[in-house]
Image 1 (cartoon, one colour):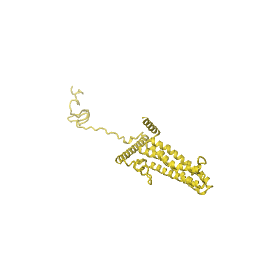
Image 2 (image 1 turned 180 degrees about the vertical axis):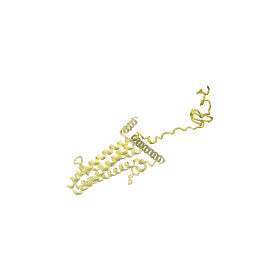
Image 3 (image 1 turned 90 degrees about the horizontal axis):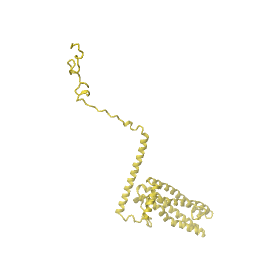
Image 4 (image 1 turned 45 degrees about the vertical axis):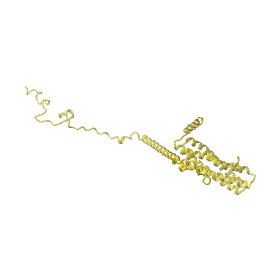
Length: 294
């Protein structure tokens, strides 16, 4: 009966050996259970490399983000450079407090302190120096304009009014231009003041308009006191020498107008490059008004 019982023969659960042979270690027969022996090592799955696919779907955004980040880094570097320059200037002033009051301009008769290389931050020196040349050009134009009206007075003694206006343009224009726009730009560049830049733009626009007016020399409102083209044409018939001087003056006024227009754009680009805006000008103006009221 026992031999006929199918459940009594070759019972795989009765012994660890089958036909006297120990089965090879396997996932179900080792002492470790279903997961193998205790000595079997477990290998963690290798993480998929997503480096090559990280940019999928973000190509355009990645480029835009990188460009914006580069601009922010550039702006931060410029601000750090400006702060370092201001600290250097402050240190020099503290170490040499009398340097600021040293009069060194003009060289033949010093009445003002002027030092672009020593006082103006490096990133603002180019527009300030170009504006300085515009100021020197204005002085040349006013001087030649006065020479022209003086020649006119010599040839025609009745033109005293034109000579007086020419003298007023020169005597009032040289210090007026310095106060109204050049010194404004000079100090605004040192202090990084948006309000100072705004005053410069207003004064320099008036200077540009005056230069264009003088270059044209329209036949009204003191036409003879401006050595412009129309004035030169009217003078050349009366006296060739005076007419030539007026034509030279018209050429100088033209160069001054073109140079001033370029300087205006250059300073405005610098103004925007420093992160300034009309809103900042209003805030500084309001702050100055509040300080004055207190």
